[in-house]
Image 1 (tube, rainbow, N blue to C red):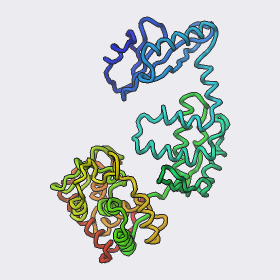
Image 2 (image 1 turned 90 degrees about the vertical axis):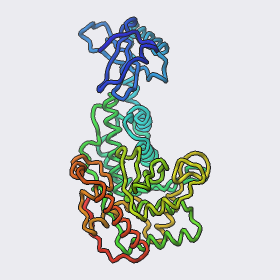
Image 3 (image 1 turned 135 degrees about the vertical axis):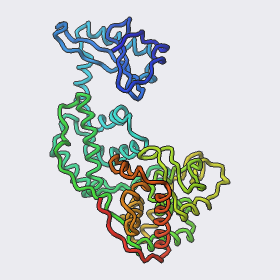
Image 4 (image 1 turned 90 degrees about the horizontal axis):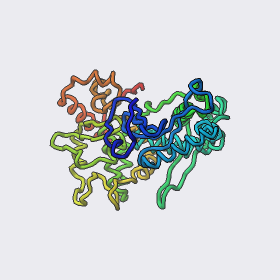
Length: 418
């Protein structure tokens, strides 16, 4: 704990620390600033309610973040709160009681604003979708203090049964296909557990009703394509291309199959991250941070054939504006429907990449190095591998997949246990 006069000039001088640090104002007793390790600065006021003196535990009332509030505005709010305390009120206690009356929908909105500081934008987008499509429709109107374990179990069964499934129009020409299923139910309950933990930390309730709920086994790593199925997908892609499907979408899907990359890594790929001379992608950021994805010759061919004349920073630019292409999901739905795989996900192409590698005899550590797995224990096992064997394996796997998608692969695949 440190003291200073909490002015804009002094606050701007505060550096980062490896832990949260609290600063108290030298002029107004109880007025303070919390600075997190990530640099978020939040004003608060601390006081003892009632007339019990030091025998009464202190309460802390959050006033707002720097940016939303200027230091002078926060100081004025602190003075007002302290005046109310002097008059016998308990501002923090009043807020706590009011928050205990919040609905789950209200708490979800608060969680997205204040409980996700360390999450990536892509993860936040997924969380927001699960909240809007599943949690709010089924539980949003319930008071946060009313929810019990039986409600969570019923919610999980309803999502698994498809009660929230829908085809939702999102933009002028956009749509969101909301699917249920056990995997969706399990992952959404996991998010709900995080939201409830947030509620407990904010003193909205004393327990987490998600704790102890037995979830469905999440089999999100088990789907992979056989050589014949890869051939069917390849034929469906060729037919879609011949019928005039968007060339960016076709190229993205082929690259996903040939690299084992995640959808977000290819869709938002920038030319500055493409290194064809060294046959790799050097991603500035991904789900697991900065990473290098080795490229086989077939993947390099696709990238080398893309049109760079449009002047965009993205390998797959949007038709208008400065963003990247957004229409791959629509084309993928058409391709998988034509191939008669209505539930196949683009992410299953990543699992198929690993399966092809195992069928070729490549080791799990080598495949893990190509895919950039995040697990520290697994990653440390192949940290000693040189770039050449990794690139050679990526090239071999990509060539095998290219042959299979063309209908010429004799490879026998083995299932990857996840």
